[in-house]
Length: 323
Image 1 (cartoon, rainbow, N blue to C red):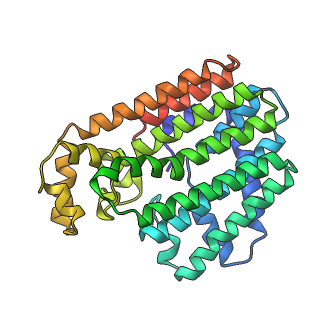
Image 2 (cartoon, helix red, strand yellow):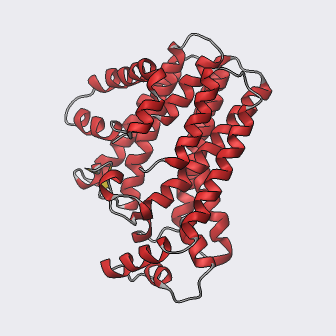
């Protein structure tokens, strides 16, 4: 479910977003059943932040938008594919309030469904006939896969926790935001300094987005989130608010107990309440705000027009959102 706040914010580019959705729908309409229905479940319902970023960069430089529609559709499908794979790896039962694909299909079929979306995304990129864009697309796919493998195999030793967390969100989230901006900037013919500024903005936006996601996992409304509260903690994942909490508390504590494997509902609820009552939530949100501010500062070097200002507003939304 997309928030009213975001719907209002994206209203100026609503026709462009609808064109992106139409391209995705065209690709999925050619898929045989039952794969088509399952892929539609997986692709629909997102916030469209990455497509919005791509469209706004195209508008910022006042160039024809058709290639940007294709790029945005490709990125949306790539993102959906990674979510299918992530849900399987993390054994998540819900995504956006709906059953995840791996809870309905066998694991092998689920992996192949995600791979199919990656293939469709690659076709859209190939249709752009722009080798530098293809290279960025391939690079970010490798970065995301390598980052997820690293996360799965990390040892979780205390000295490495903070470094692993930031490396993880860089690979999992920030890299795709940054790559989306870089590919759009390439298509727009932006100068090297402008490409650098846009990549910096998008990277900071992605980091802030993931930090707020981690906070909302603990503080958010389950109905709005579309998944159980504390999903990351239940999986033993170390997120920024959890790291802040652990740094300020001696062992044992409610969170360390859950991370050690005692994950019955009472223990998990006690851990969530402990983190939410601490200073860890505010510390994490302040860090997200700092990243947004850095991103907005990067925008100051770009053309001062409505599209650029809307990018700044999207960054502000990221830290204000409730889902």
